Length: 145
Image 1 (cartoon, rainbow, N blue to C red):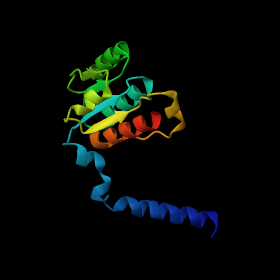
Image 2 (image 1 turned 180 degrees about the horizontal axis):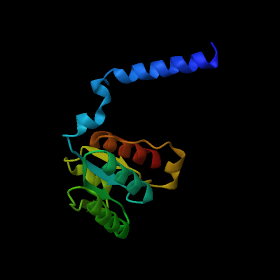
Image 3 (image 1 turned 90 degrees about the horizontal axis):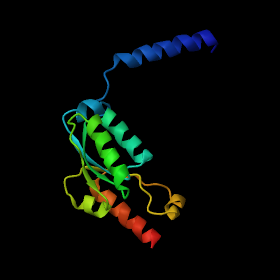
Image 4 (image 1 turned 45 degrees about the vertical axis):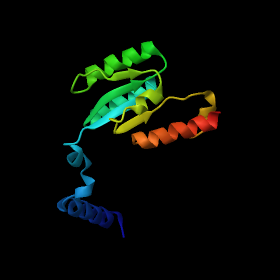
């Protein structure tokens, strides 16, 4: 097969792939357009805010809880999130992640905080639900102690 034949066949395959409709399971934005997930964030530093604000941009979410041990950073993050999300509501703030996880209204919890430098040796685990976040926090506490 020479270069011209390859280009012709590639163009034909590309054109044919655009004629078929997309499968329904591939249209995540359309499927999630009517569902608003309630999100919490543990660790309101640079990484946490970056992840959270990107999520606000790409998905229909409402940020309802923020947690950080630094109260000033927590207040700044709450003001920033309130200005960026569609509802302009200020999220609840916590200094202890256990208090935040006791609230049963969270659908998604983003965790970006490290409890000690020992955690840097472990690969980070992203939790997608409040239950898996609780188990991740328990596992991290067992590793540290």
